[in-house]
Image (cartoon, rainbow, N blue to C red; front, side, top):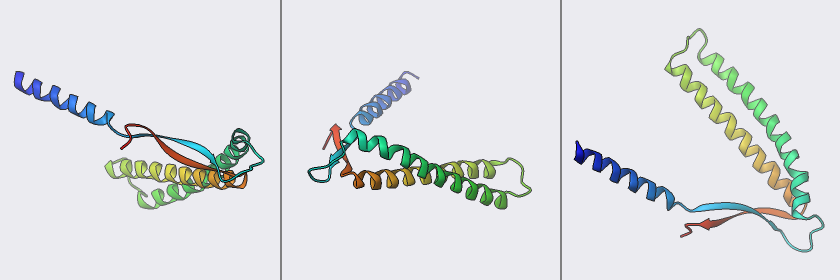
Length: 126
């Protein structure tokens, strides 16, 4: 019993340390060139709502499409593991559609104002 507790403690410690060693990134806005007429804060305040609106439209359409597919797949079925996993997959697909649309619209809009997003490693960089 004691030995298994020690093994669990060591495994938890190793997993904790391994998790801390992952690189951490942050995304920054950098100018495409100079001069740029719009500062970063202004460009973001213009582009973020536009990207959110575009992504919301894509999310709504993806949700309708996934609901239609789910209705066709589980027609007449009661809650079972297949229906539950289908719901999870539907949620993942809709979230992916939203994220992809947001990122595309946001980056496209920023580029029009002379900015782009760049990921920088800030901790545990290799």
